[in-house]
Amino acid sequence: MECHVTAISSQFGLDIALTTAAEPDWLGIIGHSGAGKSTFLQALAGFNSAANVTGRWHDRDLSQPEKAVLVSAQTPLFPALSVAGNLELVARHNQQLANVKTIVALCECTALMSRQTNELSGGELQRVKLARALLANPTLLLLDESFSAMDRALRFGILQQLKAYLGQRVKVIMVSHDINDIIVSCDHLGIIESGHCVACGPLSEMLNRSAHMTNHSLPLINVLHGKIKAKNKGVSRISIGETSVNVVDESAIPTEHSVRLLIPASEITLATDNSSALHTNCLQGTVQSVTSYSATQNAVKIICEGQELAALLDNYDSRINLLQEGQLIWAYFSGQQTLA
View 1 (cartoon, helix red, strand yellow):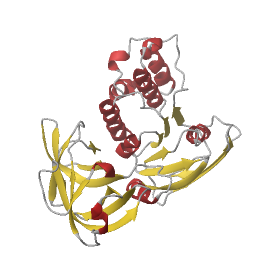
View 2 (spheres, helix red, strand yellow; view 1 turned 30 degrees about the vertical axis):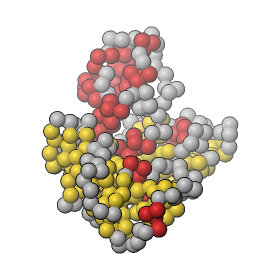
View 3 (tube, helix red, strand yellow; view 1 turned 90 degrees about the horizontal axis):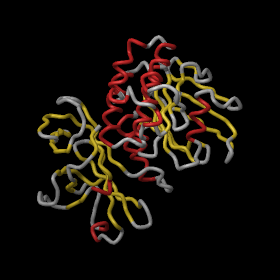
View 4 (cartoon, one colour; view 1 turned 30 degrees about the horizontal axis):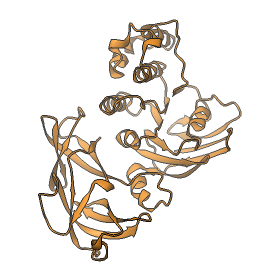
């Protein structure tokens, strides 16, 4: 994927170049408020005539905004029409009437169809706007904070259904202030600061790199790959290599499916001996490195079951000076982690 967008905003000149060696289906964008994320999406949607857009994504010419659909807080609905009327109008125009029922269910809008748009809550409005965007039959879907008003379980459920529905036929760029939304859905991640892309790459690589970013645009979050082996009463047993861990699971992901377990480095407790009383889950590993993370913390990189895991230790922790490369160590964490 190659994408280059230049534009003039009220704050700065936008000059964003995104390049990935692979061709992701979902690209996440994160950055501080005012960094240029929304201006970037508006340019790709063709809403800024002064912007210059070049690049390709798979077989799509990004300079051509046809079939690019933007979903944002500014996306208008027709106030004189009900939810059903808004969706039917777009579906009829795009020959998508046969897909209305499926998309309405996917976006959890079934109970909203008879409502007027001025009666909807923020989260309900977002679901209706998403459904209408899908009925426009896009090939490029641009999501600008499109899940921010939904509770966690609802938005994660919709994101998982959306990924399955779109498959590889629709490419998605998603902007979010919540890194968990991006981790749940995106393959690659770009970081935007002051109108420029400062880093872009595969999600796991970008999260691991955050330990070395001096501005800490991203929290230090571990992404472990595993497989669901069993589900029972809202708890899933996940195999990570030869080790199993138990995680509270709100998703509908079936057993034997590969998943990503997301563990903030700040929620990992390290011990130099095995003590199962510390936390629910434990992974044994070896120390790879200890590096400075901030003025008050160090990041300890560990190899567990062939995967990299990071934990944070406060500078005053006496164990920092005792840890050595190759040393056996145990990483403990609770079952209240995100599964994607």
